[in-house]
Image 1 (tube, rainbow, N blue to C red):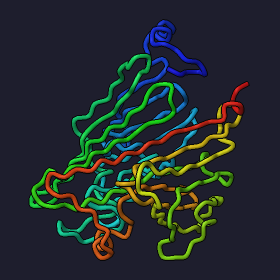
Image 2: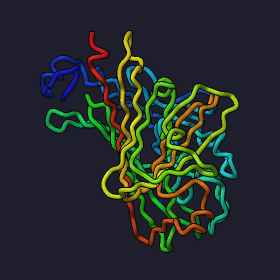
Image 3: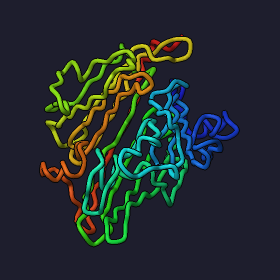
Image 4: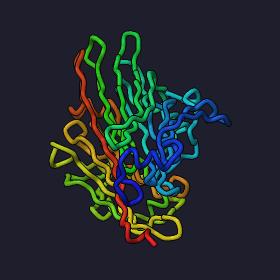
Length: 351
């Protein structure tokens, strides 16, 4: 295990602590107040600075994410609202969307409210507001590495309608400021089913400010409803109450292997000094061939969304009209893989 700038064996670490939770690991807890009451969290602490709140109550999405106690993610005004408050029609999704590092949009629908063969679908589908079942959160040694895993199942099904199952695994290891997501989506029904999937990663202050640099993968880029330039994609602004949201599409040039986008903040808070931090988001380009970029430099809603997807955000009807809709045959499955890794310039944070 690489920890505190040194390599350790398992026994060397165990000799120095009463239990490994002194350094990090996974811990389950339940919120108890207001609209968040009853929401279950799995808090992951890597021991190297990264902390994640994974939320079984909301599809094993990731709420607050922080590095050295400072947030990486943007949190919406709704907080971790319990899914019982979810309004499924129209744009009601926005009332209980948590923000946080990741909101999953899918499984059969993502984007604007739409009419579908299974009836009307509200904004961004149901995944973010569906509690997971068969949830496990554990740590185990693999040689001298302590590996953590959070797993569970999310289902979207209806009588005479779609029947999709998502099996999610979020994993990493102590001493490492990175994690992986592996999502296997299977059509367990007996009719073909739409599969629209968008991974809504949300980055905010202090990772995001006017000094932040954004690097995007090679792609053909365009703005939804406009003619944005490359500078519009990668620059950032101060909070502006009058700012309007903008959406850019980046259609990947290379649809094999893993695509990558990177946010670099040269002055991220790291205790009494600043650190040069890069956050690298990688995803399987073959199953998620486009990156949707949501730019909202408003006041309060001051957030950058980087959203690997297999669809656009105009909704089901637009996907059908443009011939983009992904369908899963009965018994067919697809696996989406994503990784997030944080790199820091150590010289800036060491005394």
